[in-house]
Amino acid sequence: MTVKPAFYVTTPIYYVNDIPHIGHAYTTLSCDVMARFKRLDGYDVMFLTGTDEHGQKVEKSAEAAGKTPLKFCDEVSLRFRELAEFMNFSNDDFIRTTEERHKKTAQALWLKLETRGHIYLDKYAGWYSVRDEAFYAESELIEGQGGEKQAPTGAAVEWVEEESYFFKLSEWEERLTQWYEDMGETVLPKSRKNEVLSFVKGGLRDLSVSRTSFKWGVPVPNNDKHIMYVWIDALANYLTAIDYPNTDSEKFQKFWPADVHMVGKDILRFHAVYWPAFLMAAGIEPPKRVFAHGWWTNEGQKISKSLGNVIDPIGLVKTYGLDPVRYFLMREVPFGNDGDFSIQSMINRTNSDLAGGLGNLAQRSLSMIFKNCEGIMPQMQDLNSDDQRMLDMLDASLGLIRTELDHSKFNKMLEIIFKLESEANIYFNDMAPWALKKTDPKRMGTVLAVTAEIVRQISLLLQPFMPDSTAKLLNQLKIPENERTFDYHGEKGRIKGGYAIDKPEGVFPRYIQEDKS
RNA sequence: GGGCCUGUAGCUCAGUUGGUUAGAGCAAACCGCUCAUAACGGUUUGGUCGCAAGUUCGAGUCUUGCCAGGCCUACCA
Image (tube, rainbow, N blue to C red; front, side, top):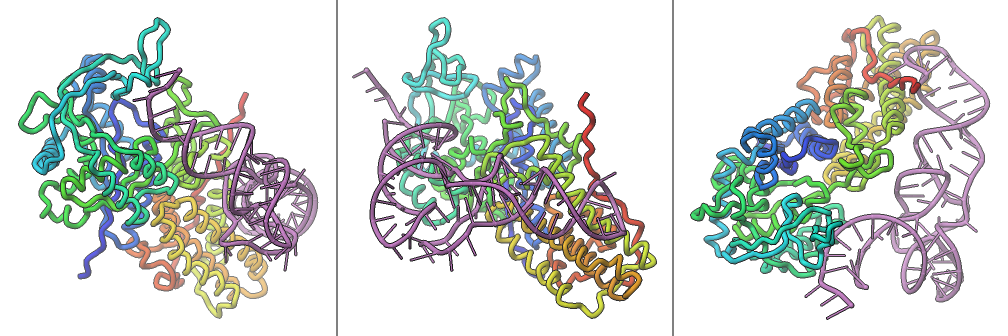
């Protein structure tokens, strides 16, 4: 048996102080697409997501809700697990930072850093905002209405002076720069890499990595007074899931370093600066890539709680259907850029690309087979240059798509796939099998078989994006479940014909807009 | 204040190392087809490539300045 190559992809762990919204769904979806693609492409995949449950903010929210922190976390974390299931995400593990296994990993990482002399104890003093969980410099503060000091975000701040452990981040400028430059695409998109690079070149200050002001977190080893502050605790989750500190474990051996840490652009710095520095300091290889994606706007407007225009992924799916939403999110915007969600473009994508394009292609060809070939999948005979051109185009597509995936260009992948769909509709129109019905039934059969083959290959390729719908299409084509990996793309899985199919049913319904009265 | 990026058809964007009539998708108009989910195909309309100057035989593509927008970063009068 040959050993499968490994692929490890992670989402950030989501902070339980927030309820799941479109941004969470988007990040995880992008990872799901990669994970599913790699599995179909013969990789052994580890796809991790989870929740970040520690910190003062959670402690206070729980208190305000009259719950213990853990009870509070249990409830909110559950909503993220439900979202993952609802969105059909295929994560292999779901980590919670309140789990015992994580505490062990975080503490082991801490001890490793401390033993190697990268952490020291000192004092930290400054203006702190509980709401933002951040310190601000005096100069950054603004004046509130009553003349009191406020963070630039408008949050209240208090003067805090406490003992704190520090990580010697300042020593890593050179090594980090080297990591960005030598290894090529460690930070993507490139514009983000430039940002990170200029931040690092601007000089790094040591990082405060512990707190004594609250209790809800992982205790610092050998000094219970201190709780690990967010960075080491949260980021360590990527190691927890693969058994660190047991570096001999099969999982660790196989999956580290991670192939992609997918993050929103807001937390890029933690992943592209702090995290690789921690790892290198601990003598662990840094990840191969950190990818920062963009944000969604809603009908051209910035999304914010105060505007009340937060997009609920569950509501969206209930309105438009799961696969259309998954498709839309991956198709509408070059991944990495900000994108705009609008009802009109959602409907256009659903009705033009899915219902009118792919859905109709499947329906018109399968219906003809069902009605005119006695429900038996015809065989390809005497292929002409038109047929061959289509098949060649299909067979060549996997390679192109694979390249795009490796750069997280999901929209490009879908563009390539839907170009095939469009070519197929042109082919079908030009061949006009309904006219051949009377003049040359054998030729009609070939055209229909070629079209079915096109639907088969497109469905195979679309599985990572729309797992449910493509399964329906492949079922209609009677493709056995064990012949749906990318091995069977192209010649090897070619439809042979000669078997019965069922009466076809439309897979992508049109979205009919209700009257706005 | 520094640094980076963007500004190309109504909308979203491509435009390789500067090279001949600037492209695609969507939208719009018209035509064709009738197998199909009122779906599909074809044709057409549509741009002084943000503004100005410069380099060049030649610039959407390079340089400078300006305007507009975005992002990162900065302890300051």
